[in-house]
Amino acid sequence: MRAVRVGIIGGGSIAKAHVIGLRSLPSYFGAEGLRVEIPVIADIRRTAAENSAQRYEIDRWVTDWRAVIEDDDIDAVTIATPNHTHAEIAIAALEARKHVLCEKPLADNAGAGESMVDAAQSAGVVDSVHLNYRKIPAIQYAKRLIEAGELGSVLRYRGAFLQDWAANPLVPRSWKFEAGRAGAGPVLAVGCHVVDLARFLVGEISEVSAITKTSIRERPTPRGLSTYEVETDVSEMAPVDTDDMAAMILNFDNGAIGTIETSRVTLGRKNHCFIEINGTQGSIVFDYERMNEIHVATSQTAGLGMARVVIGPEHDGGLVWSLGGLGVGFAETVILHMRSFVKSITTGDVEVATFLDGLRAQEVVQAALASAASGVRELVPRHPIATVPIP
Ligand SMILES: NC(=O)c1ccc[n+]([C@@H]2O[C@H](COP(=O)([O-])OP(=O)(O)OC[C@H]3O[C@@H](n4cnc5c(N)ncnc54)[C@H](O)[C@@H]3O)[C@@H](O)[C@H]2O)c1
Image (tube, rainbow, N blue to C red; front, side, top):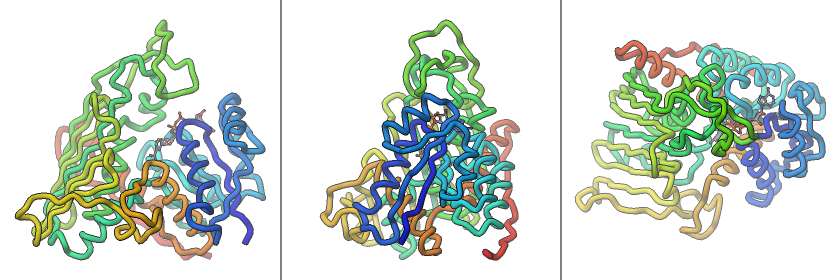
């Protein structure tokens, strides 16, 4: 079988994960249907395009993403650019009948996300949003426990995604702090992951109340290529108009209730993506910073408190490693997502988070932002989907 030829659009920080994710597939899982080539990378900044092509040993680099989309030799694209560019690039790629993996959040606003979902519905190709946290083996195990009824009926979801990379006010005012390009701050950037886990494990969210806060209101204008590196030249400052912190209170369609907190200024929290789910028979607790374990209480064990389960082949079917306790990291979450994306292309059986999943998460965040502005509880708007048969 011919290799799937993927063009990467955007050569910034997450492009590294896309390259690792795609190139690791045959060695991790065997070459059957998973051979990938990356002939081209695009970045609007020439230096970023050239540097990443050199670093990742990609033969060709371009500064206009349209050159990738117009290339008949390219089967699929991954979109690793700022949020406000996702819709234009993804819709053009879908119209050119390329399979598309778009970074999360799906877009900078739900309206743009709706156009992407509509375009995907009629394109007849694979559309996926990179909500890769679903692929963590401990999360997949939690889903199986919940589906098997081990927790009984779910009563409550407690989610948080707290980081501290922006706690230093000298972290530059990149696009990530600009509502016009990011859409919002961590309530969207990492909130979409923890909202997606809520949907994946508990169900659709119907209503949201929220508060948001911006604690650092200006930052140095960026000079370098990195969005995370502290700026040494602080002669020019630029305003920040995105949230730094948020808290949401949720109602689910199935009657469960929940909370979600997000932040990128919470000192000491690195990638604290935390979830706790409580049901009538038991509970689970997961923390990304210890992603190779999960704490579980079931009807048989709850009297003793939470039991720590070390994730291994008995929980993920030996998909990653065949020995328990070896552990996975961020790279494997991407590799597992890329495996599903490429398998969806080569087999036609879609088994990966789609644009619609990205939109549903975005709609919850949009309702949270509306609630933070209005001060009242908001219904989550849901775009009606007309499923167009795949030609
Ligand atoms: N799935 C995850 O866990 C995860 C983690 C980090 C970032 N992301 C997402 O990845 C996307 C990119 O984030 P990042 O951290 O890599 O940002 P970044 O700023 O490090 O990189 C973005 C790159 O896109 C380039 N770019 C901007 N506009 C472009 C255009 N029109 N055409 C081509 N290139 C363009 C920039 O020059 C830059 O090199 C965002 O949507 C972000 O939310 C996802």
